[in-house]
Length: 396
Ligand SMILES: Cc1cc2nc3c(=O)[nH]c(=O)nc-3n(C[C@H](O)[C@H](O)[C@H](O)COP(=O)(O)OP(=O)(O)OC[C@H]3O[C@@H](n4cnc5c(N)ncnc54)[C@H](O)[C@@H]3O)c2cc1C
Image (cartoon, rainbow, N blue to C red; front, side, top):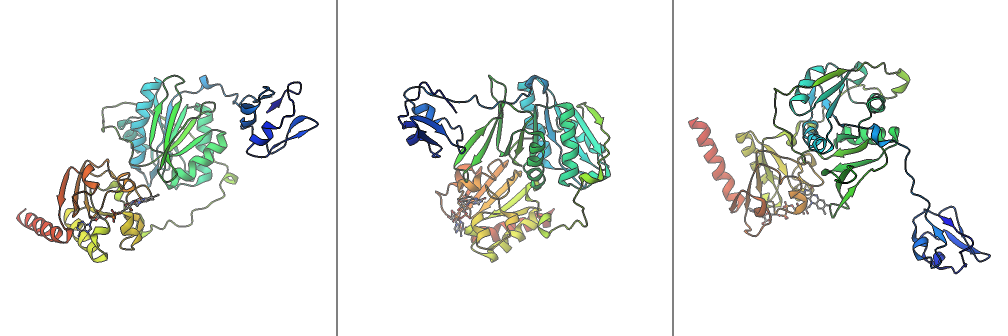
C-alpha cells in the first residue's frame, strides 16, 4: 500500500479496519508494518483518499507468445489412461474457441505406437519423448522433460488428469514454470472477452464451485477430474503430426529410483473403466448383501461399486467407492441398489449412459437421475434377477 503523507490526518480509521493489525499511527501518520498483505481494506475506508493500492503484480510474460492447448497423455505400461482421451475432448472445445490447435504430449518408453490413438481421439499433433528414464512415472525426469518442452513450444494451456500421477506432477511443473495451477477441475471454458480459461472446481466439500483464472502467467494449467469430460468418438481417419523429441536427462536430476512395481490388489479394481457397474449402498444391508451383488456382477461381467455409507460400514473397500470423495464412473449401465442418491454420490455416477435404481423408498432422490426405477426390496429383487440371468445364459 502507498500512503500519501500530505493527505493522511492520522485519524486511525484504517487501523481499525485492517484485518491483520498491520497499521499503526505514529506522529499523526499511518505506518504500514511488515505483515501488510496489500488487501486494500484500508484504502477502501480512508475518507481522505490518502492510501493507494500498489499496482497488482502482473507478470512480464508476453501473452501473445503463447499458443495452443496441450494435453499430458498419461500412459501406464503403454496403455493410455481414459482421462487423457477425455482431456483431448475438452481441449478440442477450448481450441475451437481459441482458434488454435491441440497437442498431446506423450512421455514414456516404447510408446510411439500409441500416438495414433491420440490423433484418432482429437490431437492435431503429438510430441513424443521416448526415453528409458521415462519408462515408469517419476516426478523428476517427467518434470525435467515437460517443463523444457513447455518452455520451447510455449502452449497457452496445459491440461493433466487429476490422477495420482497428475496430482503429483502438475504442482511440481507449475512451480518450475512459475505459473498458476487449478487442481481437480470439473469444468473448463473460455472467457469470451479476455479469452482466458475459466477453471471451475468444487471447493469446501463440494458446497462451493470456485471459478479460477490465470490471467497474467502462461501456460494456464489445470488438472481435470477423470470421468467428467467427454471424449470424442474414435476417428481413425483423422490425421496429425507426430514430433519426436530426444532428451538426455542428466542423472543428477533423478533422485528417485524404481526398485519394484507392486500392483496392489486394489489396483485391479478399476471401476472407472467398467462398462457395467452394480453399486450397493446402505440398503444392501451388510457384507452378505454385497456378496449377493458380487455374484450378480460376475454373471453380468460387471464391476461392483458402493456408496460411502457402505464403505464406511466396512462392507467393501474404499477402492469401490463412487462419488465426490470416491471415483467418478461413466459406465453404459449403472445399477444402484439401496442407494438413496445423495448429491455427493450422484457427483460420481450421474453421467452414466443408463441408470437403473432399485430402492424401497419411492421418494429416494436416486429416482430423479434414474432412467429405470424399481421400488422394491433388493433382498427380493436380486435373487429373481440372478435366476433370470442364469436362465438367459443357459439358453444362450
Ligand atoms: C464431503 C462429503 C463427501 C462425500 N462423499 C461421498 C462419496 O464420494 N460417495 C458417496 O456415496 N457418499 C458420499 N458422501 C455421503 C453422502 O452424503 C451419503 O451419506 C451417502 O451417499 C449415503 O449412502 P447410501 O445411499 O448408501 O445410504 P443412505 O442414504 O442411508 O440410503 C440407503 C437407501 O437404501 C434404501 N434401502 C434400505 N433398505 C433397502 C432395501 N432392503 N431394498 C431397497 N432399498 C433399501 C433406503 O430407502 C435408502 O434410500 C459424502 C458426504 C460428504 C459430507
